[in-house]
Each structure stands twice: as C-alpha cells, then as structure tokens.
Image 1 (cartoon, one colour):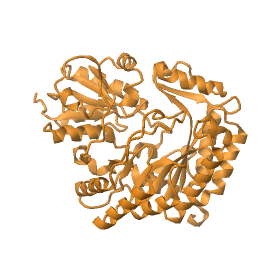
Image 2 (cartoon, one colour):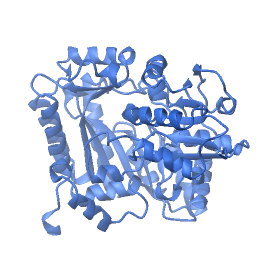
Image 3 (cartoon, one colour):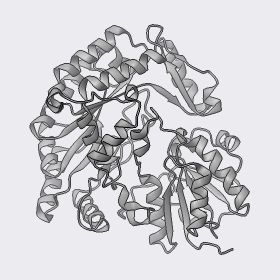
Image 4 (tube, one colour):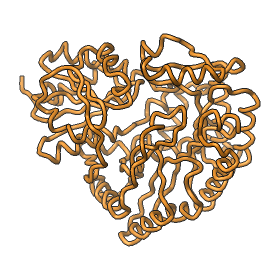
Amino acid sequence: MSVSERVLFVSAGMSRPKKRDHALSRRQLYLNYGVLTLATVLDAGGHPSTLVHGEHEEAVEFLEKLAAKGLLPSRHPIMLSLPSFYALEWTKAFCSGLKARFPECRIVAGGRWVTDPDPEWLRRQVPEIDLVVTGLGEDVIHGLIGVERRGIAVAPGSRLPSLPLDHTLVGGFDRFQPSIEASRGCGMGCSFCEERDIRLSPLRDPSLLADHMERVLEQYGGGGIHPYLQSSFFLPSTSWASRFRQEAERRGLRIPWRCETRVDAMKPETVAHLAAAGMRVIDLGLETASPTQVLAMNKTEDVDRYLRSASELLRACAANGVWVKANVLVYAGETARTIGETRAWLDEHAFAIKGVSVGPVVVFGPPRRAASLLADLERRGASAVDPDAAEACGITQVHPSREIDAGDAEVISLDLSRRYMTRGDYFDLKSFSYYPRGYGRDDFDADVRASDLSMLPFRDRRPAEA
C-alpha cells in the first residue's frame, strides 16, 4: 500500500446540523479558515498539504473517500480540527474508523474552542487521538509533523500570519466562499461569549488586507467571490475605513464582502466608507433589545446608548445598501415582556433588516468550562435541559426561564425569524456566504420542497411574489 507524502488536514464534520435538520441546513458549507491557516503556513514552508472538510457526510464513508484519493495512509500525523462541540460525535466515528483501518496513523487534534476548556476530557471522549493541541498552532505546526508523543501540547498565542490563506489547498475549494482574517479576539465581556476575555487584536493594515483580497481573487480565477472578513468583533475606525476604501478604489477591487460586529461599534460615516469598499452584508450581534436582558448579558452598562447606537447603525446600513442580518439570543430570564421589547424594537427597524437569526442560549464545554456560566444562568431563572450533557457531549441546552422552556424558545425563535425574513431574504443571505458557489435559486426551491416547512425560519414569500 502506498503512503501519502502530503500532510492531511481534516476539518471534522457534523453528524447532523447544529440547529434544525433539513435539506437547506445540509447544503451549508463552513470553511474552516483556522485550520486552513495552519495548512497554508505548512505548505508555504515546504510541506505539501491538503485540507478536506467532513461536512455532513458519514464519517466512515468520508474515510473511504480519503483512502480512495490516496490521502490515506499518510507518512505524517493526521491533523484533525474540531471547529465546535457539534463535531464531537462525527469525530468519534472518524477516529475509531481511522485507527481500525490504518492503525499506524497518528492523530493530532486541535480546535481551541473544543480543546482548550479541558483537553483531558477530550482525550477521554476520543481515546484514539494521540496528541491534543491547545491554543493557536501557527508557531508550532512545523514541529508537529514528526511528533511521536501522546498526551497534550500547549501552543502559544500568535499574531496573524502575514500570508493570505491558500484556498487552493482545500478539497473542492471552488465550492466554498473564501475567508480573509481581519483580526482576532473580542474581549468585550459578554457573559455568553467564548471570546469575552480574549483581547481584540489590531485590524490588519488596509493595504495588506487589500493585498490578500487580490491574492484570493487570483486563486478563484478572477471573479465570483464574496469573502467573509473574519473578525468576531470587526472594529474599524473611520480613518481605517477611509484608507481601505482608497485602497480598493486605487486597485479597482469590486469585491462584495461580509463581516460581523457589535451593534454599538461602528459609526455611520464608517459604514459609508466600508460600503464603498465593498461591504455588502453585515452580521450584527444585537442579541436583545430588552433593557433587562442587555444588562443580564453584560453587553453594556449604558442601555440607552447601546440601543441608540444600534438604531443609528441600522439606519446607516440601509442608507448605504448594506444588508443586515441581526442575531438575537433567547437568554436566561426571558419573559413574554422581554421578548415583546425585542420584537417591538425589531418592528421599528424592520425596514433596515434583511434577516434575523434567532436561537436560545446554549452552554458549550465540559463541566470545567460550563459550570460557571450555567450557575449564572440558573441565578437568572434558567435550568439545564440535561444536567449531564456537559460531561456527555459538551453541549448543554437550557430552559431559558420558568415562563419559557426549551420548547417555547424554539417556537419563539422560529416566529421571530419568520416575522422579518422571507424565502428570498434567506436565500440571498445564505447564498452570499454559506451555500456552495453555483447553488442557484432553482436548487434552493427544490430543497425547500424537500424540507419540512415547519422547521424553516422564513416566511414562504411576500404577497407580491405569489
């Protein structure tokens, strides 16, 4: 049997979608840009690398395809990335299947959201993993190629690599919309956020970000891309936005892109510059418009300023042709009153909203990580649906309050999403970033017909579309 000389990176798939399981959810593609960063660094350093995503394919079938393509067995450790706890079930099946088929293969697992909270817990969950790496791996990835030891390795924090991501290293890369990392961290202290205590790094220089856009455009043959500027808290100053606009105009870059930020972070004049530089979609972490819940989430201590800034930002986006997708969180302590306050605020700003993504708060992590947040949620009236879930799978669903249980939260989530989002809105937002490139409206409509309509988070159509 031949042995591959390439370093194989695997982004763990999911046995089922993380929210609702229907045909549209299974179409979504999530580029694992974190592990692609490692593959890019390694490949540029002389170790030919390939990244393959598990998506929603059965782990054993996925494994057989890797072998058929000659990627397994490999002379090097299999670099497995767990992008979330939702990938754990798939990971178990993949690792057990890999060791059964190729017992000589070594598995190095990373993915800081899953590995960092309690690496020993992960090793108990997936004993086939040889080495668990915590932290960010750019500075240690070369040393992991020949690693023989088992256990846990700690990677230091690292700055953003200067290299643009090499999307051509991804199997079937032209199906994915590309990513360009703009900054890391957040550090704003929101109680539910994984990055609440991770300091925000400076944004890339506008000229370097424009360089990366040009390189990615070349990788994709010169067009048809909608990059996601990856940054949990995209916080450009007006000066930065102006310089980025000038760079885009000077280079003739006409690339529509997407980003994510808080609702109280961006000035209207900044939005104008970014829109001129290509910003077409923005994911806004509103989370709630209830004063009680804003404080409960630790979003801010000045609720009036928070909501006033949110209103100004949405109006600026509407004035500049930027689509807004607002994220809403059904949090601990919710009541009909607090949900009504959020609904009323969204109604007032519906003219500026393309879509709304709504879901109940979920506690991620094994007991060591989950305990403190669960305790805080319980003090606010929430309770775990399954108290043993943190140990079993690292995902604890909650009943938000005594008035609103987990089933009610799902109904509220769907009702709010449908109130502000049509079938066309949903398709526009998903196809911009998450559906495969080339997936058209006819494909989408066929998948809608194949889905349980009661699970879909949009109104079927506007009256004018009937």
